[in-house]
Amino acid sequence: MKELEERIRREGIVKAGNVLRVDSFINHQMDVLFFDKMGAEFHRLFAGTPVNKILTIEASGIGIAIIAGLHFGVPVVFAKKSRSSNLGDDVYHTVIHSYTHNNDNHVVVSKDYLSPADHLLIIDDFLANGCAVEGLIDIAHQAGATVEGVGIAVEKGFQKGGDKLREEGYRVESLAIIEAMDAATGEIVFREQ
Image 1 (cartoon, helix red, strand yellow):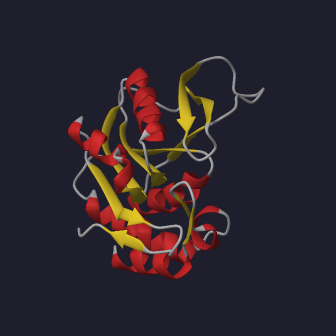
Image 2 (spheres, rainbow, N blue to C red):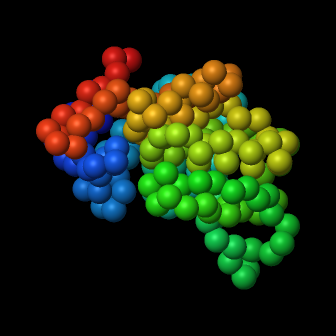
């Protein structure tokens, strides 16, 4: 998605440690009109797949997933990083390591919202090492659901999480794939798609 690449070049801030900040339109302030374009692109990319539900993880993936859900006309389920008192004990559970925060999160989804009848599209804002997506796939497998694909806004191709998922047989569609970025110069190189 060339428009996303241009927006990242214009507004993204490359930080040390392979961190890309896109707070101005994805992670802190959300440009919902731009999300609408991303949701439409995910819908185009996964046209013809029997998606009946979208699965994401809190927090930054929720906005994009909701707009994608509008385009698909399906509900969106998000995995919670903490168990609230009203959730109950009947949950699917996995542990996901956060690259950004360098910690482990115990992630849950109520068993009320995922089942073997579900054909899931996993949506997230970033894909680096693939830990979040692998955790969501684990939850999908616990539920007996089918993972139809993975839609990612920004993939850090140099961190190989996307390559690993593709090698495992998952269809991964990323709207922008970064091959390299340099904190000293701010330069970002995108993979041709």
